Length: 208
Image 1: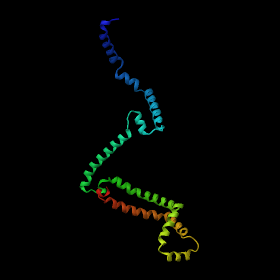
Image 2 (image 1 turned 180 degrees about the vertical axis):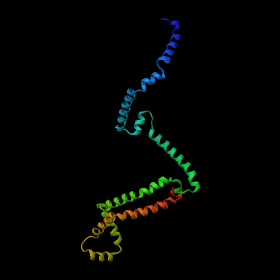
Image 3 (image 1 turned 45 degrees about the vertical axis):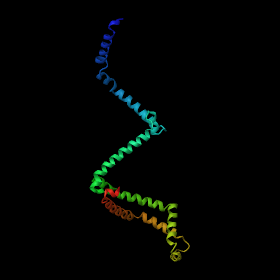
Image 4 (image 1 turned 180 degrees about the horizontal axis):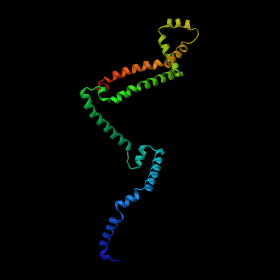
């Protein structure tokens, strides 16, 4: 309608839109409100659920986003990052002949000590389960056979006392009883505390 003033009219319309219609406040009022936030939550939850239920690997999903050879690239970057950090850490600690105790924070040292009874209980529990199993019994029998291979007279003597019973049937229950005793956990805990104390004195270079 007014071809001579099209440029001027376009600029004025643009200014009107920017200054009065699409302002930061108007966008904020439209986007950041309870209804919009709730809709966004529903959308994000649905997308996350969809991503978690997919059978595709992380590499395949990244490939879909245009990140080709992503797994190889990520692995390379991770290796470079870790090696770089490790080299810096080595220079700061190994050159000063530090011990493990010098670099492990006190609260972690205490946490390691506090966890020893639970660790002892776990080891004893697993030991009992193993030697109570058919595989554990076979292993014990093999160990007994190896022990008595060059002690033929000794096994004959023992056989006189136990009669026709197999030696393994006498020994296996006793080993299981040993694991069931509460003092077994105490003995193991004392040993582990002692070994942890020795380990703390190791130089970092030795641990590496």
